[in-house]
Amino acid sequence: MNAEMNNDKSNALFRALALGAVVVVGAGSLGWMFYTGRNNPSILLMTLFTGWVGSPFLALILMEVIALRRSSVRYKMMLAIAFISVIGYSGLVTPPDVKPAFIFLAVPLLSWIIMIIVVVASTISRKNKGQ
Figure (cartoon, rainbow, N blue to C red):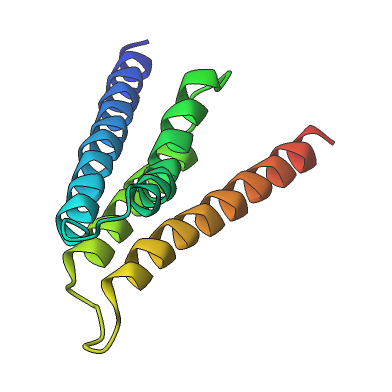
């Protein structure tokens, strides 16, 4: 019983860490985007970029809100996407000739690809365990 309580506490801590990372990195990503595009006069373009850059973070939060059960795989995915976003948007691994707009298009695309792969793989795994 005591081990089960410790496991519940560590899962709650892991969940809080993952959700916190998604919220903080999501806000930071939008901040980087607004800073990078501060000289762009197009409100439409900035609105589209805001939706695109924020969409993976919003999707992760919605996944957690509507999920029927807690999943350490989902929390690991949340942390991985937060980490990839920080690396991508900070410019640590950006080649010198790449335009900033490309980064703000590519990082969310990579995030969506990772989310789709993880969700499909975990769905297939769950179905195979049920058989």
